[in-house]
Length: 355
Image 1 (cartoon, rainbow, N blue to C red):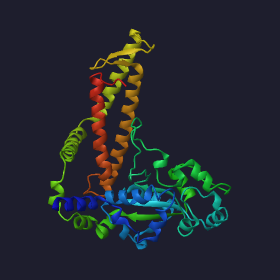
Image 2 (spheres, rainbow, N blue to C red):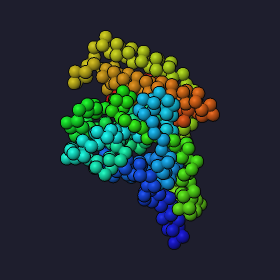
Image 3 (cartoon, rainbow, N blue to C red):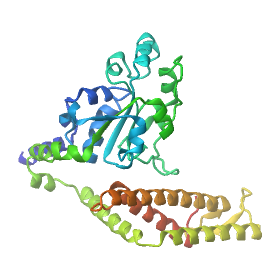
Image 4 (cartoon, rainbow, N blue to C red):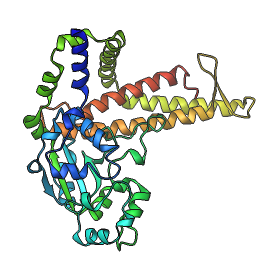
């Protein structure tokens, strides 16, 4: 029975909804009830913020927000800091008054109640990027089945239908896209939360500890799969650290040259498969490799390399601002993409990239 009690407490410690039964902040409460947020943000924003920042966000108050203009947000340091969360809103009194008179156009869960005081949330930005669900600054790989779409992105501007519906008939309606220029033009105010500051005030580890009751009991309940998953994560972290020390620029250059050579040789050879596709050869498992596979491999390599270089740049900027930092989120992504690229490079070398 004691194990059952520990298990229930352990599960409860992971249930962030219990830590977020009511927002103390009226600002956060209104923002969290917009744009389908009852189903998407209300659970996810609480869970994502707590998971990312280890916060009891139900304790956040209106006084924890600072406000600035969209232009000032981008010119200042907020846009470069992934621990500064900016809620870009349109609270133009003229627009709000117009929206009240045309409430039939309000899409989703927007209502006169949740937009009247603080405005409509256009996007939620961290590190200069309009985030996707999961507090993610990257929507995912082009080829991943988990790649996030517009519906997974916070705020009205990410969704074509909802933007056009909300601003239907309003003079100067913004375009439905999340870009720096569009946010500066469309938003009237930015509400900013400093996660680093909030961690000092509302760290949730104590609450988790109280609810879990016994760390030993929870650990004892780990399954073999959970232990295996944890060991796998450690192993991947080791491989990522090793990959980060590799000459990534050279790996990409050599891989692209080799792929181009594979394609060139296939065209010269002129061999085709039964579907009329030029054949490069066979992979280690005997599958046919076509020149389309080679082209896809080049595109995927360049996509990952572009993200790698961008994260590398942002990690360096973070280190300049915080010398004791390892680059934070961006530093971790540099290692992750270094590992992806070295994996791709090995597949190219082994001719193991059949689609």
